[in-house]
Each structure stands twice: as structure tokens, then as C-alpha cells.
Image (cartoon, rainbow, N blue to C red; front, side, top):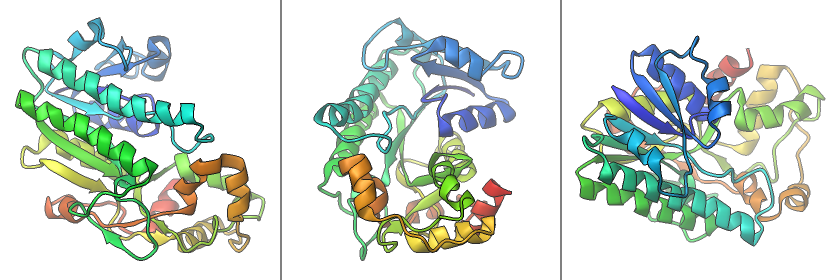
Length: 306
């Protein structure tokens, strides 16, 4: 297959491009910075990758690169956890997903021949947060900022159905790998100062990066997959259990909590990404026949931190 990927130079995207090439597919990488894209995917190591510069929030010639592709994976979106949610930052978070997806759907509508499938990223923030509820793909939408972003993001993706293109939406949890959340939590543990963030009671719905990539490849290649699938492992844990396992794998203590007030002082509203959570189960994902390499968190952390 020939697959176009946005967000390809990110934490999940780089591994997805590697996996697609390993399986013999060719990849069109759509990136805002073509020079950086060529550094990340040099021709010597990635002979089946073509790097195309694009402006994600604007129509343009780049949209022609989607014609002739068999599938599109849309992973692009501004980071939600690295800085304060000022009104300007909130708008950037929304626009990067809503308008970015709108332009991808527009490109698919114009393409001839058209891709047969769009795999569009979303997030488990769709469900809102809770310490007591359990959510699966049929659960109702939440009402906080991230839930609203996910709803508008997914609504734009749904418009691709008007073109006859199959749609798979992957609501992703916290992705574990060397990078992302694990890397940010490493230093305190290395300094023997690791522990839960906030109360430790908040749910931590996670997935190993390799499982998420495998799920996306299955979504591209399995015509039976259609609609929403949770990109989470089947065994979510509370934050205290996650950090306990991380401490055991690193042979470090995990008893020193990071007070919620400290994270709130540092990140403001953005702190809710780690201080609040949701217990999300991948019911439709498992029903689709998808097989996880990492169903429980300790083996996942052992693979990452070995």
C-alpha cells in the first residue's frame, strides 16, 4: 500500500513510518518542516518514504500528494501537556486538530483516485474524567475542554464518509515508550524521588507505543474495522500503581508524591492531563480481533526501560 501520514515526525508517527516500511508499504510523510522530515527519514534508511512539505491549516498544492494513496493516517495536533492553556494555546490545540483534519478530508475529496481509508487520531479525553466510571467506545461524550476538542476533531473526520472513504477513529490513551510520558517521569526516579502525581487515585489508561502502531496498521489493512476504537491497553491502572511498577522496574523508590498544587502552579489548566484521568476499556478493539503485545503495565515498562 501507499500511505500518507501527518504527524509522522512525532513520537508515534516515527514508529508508524518505520513499521509501514518494514511491512513493505511506501509512505508519503506530510510535514510542516520538510528539511527536518528528510533528516528524520533519510533516503539511505527510508528508501520507500517521500517527504512532502505542507501547511496543515491551509489548502494548497500539498493536497495533491494524497491522490493515489491507498490510505491516510492523520496524527497531527499541537501538544496538550507541555505548557499553560492560555486562551491562545487552547485555540491552537483546537485548530491544529479541527482545521488540520478539515484540510485532510478536503484533500481526500479532491483526490482521484481516492484513498480507501482514513485512520484519524483522537483521544480518550473525549469521555471526560472520572475516578469511578468506566468508559468504552459506546460511552457518552464528556463536557470539559479536552472532550469538546475531541468532539469537534472527530466531527471533521466523520465528513470523510461523504467521499466513500472508510473511517477509523482511534481514541488514544497515554502512549508508553522511550519518549512521551515515561521519559518525562524518568528523572525523579533516577534521583530516588519518584512517586505518584497528585492524589495517585486518578486512572491512567495507557498503551504501549508498539501496540498503538500495530492497531493503526490493522485499521489500514482490515476492511472490517470501521468507526471508533479505543487505543488503550485492556488493563488501565491508577496513577499510584503505575508509579509503583515504574519504581520496581527501575529498582527505585516510588513513595514521594508530586503535590497537585505544584503541577497546577507549573502548568495551570494543562495539569488536568495528569491530575485527572479516566478508566477506558478497549471493548471494540478487542472484539475486532486485535492482539496486544503488552496487556499489563509492568511488562510494557520492562520493555521500555530494559
